[in-house]
Amino acid sequence: MNSIIKAFDRLPLLVKVIFALPVLDILWGFYRLCRSIHHKNVLGIVLGILMLVLCPTILWILDIITILLSGRVLWID
Picture (cartoon, rainbow, N blue to C red):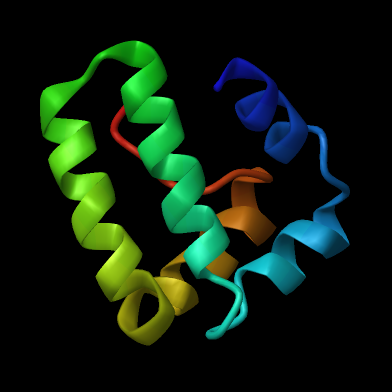
């Protein structure tokens, strides 16, 4: 799990933005779920599962904005 988190964190900015596009944004939902499982955050796990459903349809715009501004996706950890 930790290797997946590190791999996503080390991606170049352009690849992170491409992964935030509507169809590929499910990858960031998977990343959020992995982070919450790694930190044993129950609320994060529940929200991460919801993100797998909502990210490709709604939250991809927020992901692109936060990646461009801070270099990472917004999450509760």
